[in-house]
Length: 203
Image (cartoon, rainbow, N blue to C red; front, side):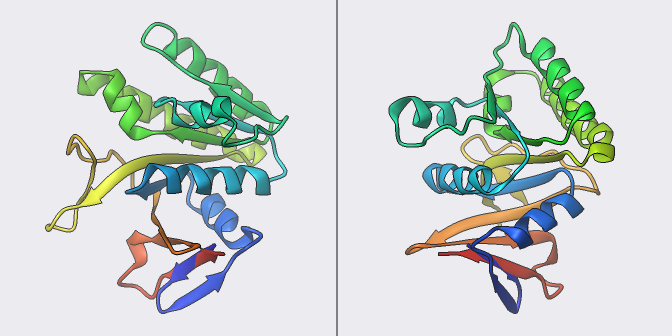
């Protein structure tokens, strides 16, 4: 994996640099245009961290890969699959866990959140919960990563793909773009592309 800090590229096979980035920019949004590349990155990240992981699977892709045997589930990974009936209860449980002990919390994905809810208010509420998890989990070292399938518009704006809805984020959010060329995964902080940002690379 390569962490792209343009014009510098940092080879990051043990994910040290990108984990530090995510800790400094919490929550972090990871954008990608290919779902399998996103799943591969998340699997590498989860396998590389020492802390337990709460994986909130809104779009059911990651859990589908596990059920099919394409991805092997680690023992310290808790997979939560919210639905329209129980999502508030499950998010409350996650908030409690993440505030008591250090976790890596993965929200996969913004697309799944918007697909689950027709009204923008519910999506905004979920986003507020994400910010709350990040805020109250800081004292125990909890990091939050949110993924999204997205594309860039001509006006330099990133939107969910498909659907075209704008991604909700705050000023404290780190936003990264993930891509894979040949066998190399590159992740770039898009907020710093014009400010000598770095790229993380794993091969």
